[in-house]
Length: 190
Image (tube, rainbow, N blue to C red; front, side, top):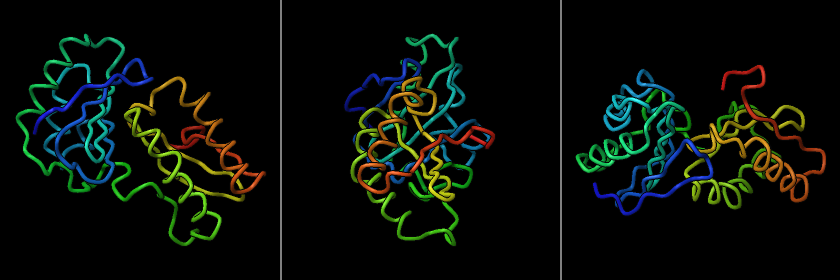
């Protein structure tokens, strides 16, 4: 697999590697245990300083710990990616997001959730992917939408403040003025 370019992200602790291969559906790995069924993600976690790994379509986003030395991590990640041949992602168990954006219980699916999901896929996901991230819809209870950020967005300070507000404003103006958007992790597993 070849690296086409390396891009910074708005998250100061994440970098996006754009590759010449289709990596499949979004898959985020929080640790080496979750990455056991994905050789690339598992190998990336063997590099000191890796915090999370996010694979999506044609890019890999690496989030690093605060203590990581960027130049060392960057060079080791670069070497490792070049050794792998696609396909890499097989929608492994343990990866968050392997089934796509909508992780809500299928019995809760309704017209409102479908409208929200479609709008997020068309207008929000491309922007997040451009910055090395993504999101999942975790729950829709009454008119409160719970989302989980992925990749560079997962640990980015601006994701909670700016992006969350922008998503809520978009949904309020295009779907329902009473919708609230909250991040997963506020008393829930993130």
